[in-house]
Image (cartoon, rainbow, N blue to C red; front, top):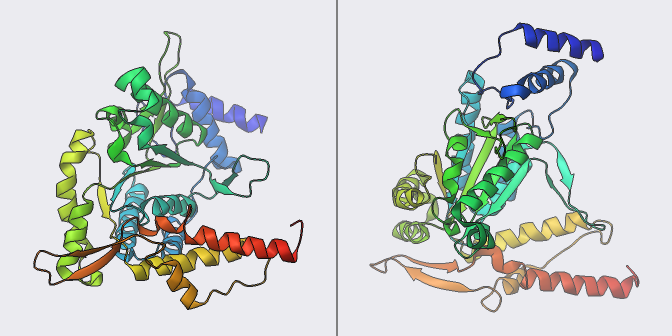
Length: 383
């Protein structure tokens, strides 16, 4: 290893260092470039893995994960798959750019879940959640920013102003990409809440041949720059929710409404909002999510119960839930619905106001789990 390191260092010193920072593995410029270039070359030669590597076949893993985990958003999933396919083709051809996606739609329809499942699918390593008894883990390389933390009423904005919030986002993103050597899935949730101009600091990271540089706080600081060519940025919002619902009501059957029709209408409506956030030029793809009807809430409930069963195979052999119980759980007493119709009242729909979000927290799914836990406690005291 020492001999190999020496050879790599000699080779890197002999060759003229490229001025471009746009390399596949998030190279570093300035005084530190030799060290990081050498690390990358060593990694390639002796098989050292990146901290947050992608899976070998991104498209296949993403396809399997989203089709299994995301309910009632088939058109959105197809659009996401097409977007990743083009990105992968660009990367293989040498055109380095981050993938920047905007997901928009009503509350509780699967936008954030989809973003997290994208991270689950394409990042190959897991990181255990902190906590003594925690059994949960999450994809190593996923970073989530929450819009409310950068809203006009947030502590950051109130105490540090827009420039302070910008510095915070830039530092957190740079630290994350530094740790992950440029491989990451970065999610901005509820971006509609962000104070205008705060996200402008990300412009260089989101554009073609994007990059992000380390903050300079003193004259002695070394400037380190990472390419964002291997970063997936996902911006989530509820912008244009009304447009999506109205378009769905015009056709009645969601399978008959081409996703590109919704996408184009929504993208036009989004432009003003993105311009307000100084993001309009950087958003490469808009993915609309449709509202959920009772049948979709029921399908999601089935999936959640199956996941609950799979996590607790050491407690019970099988979890069988009668269909009548499912109907009761998604009924009007447990889930808030709203009757909607188009202008001519020719199409009529019942939408879940908060989507599937009402199943969790203090909803019927939590109530059922509590009942099951009570039974388990009676059968197995102390467990």
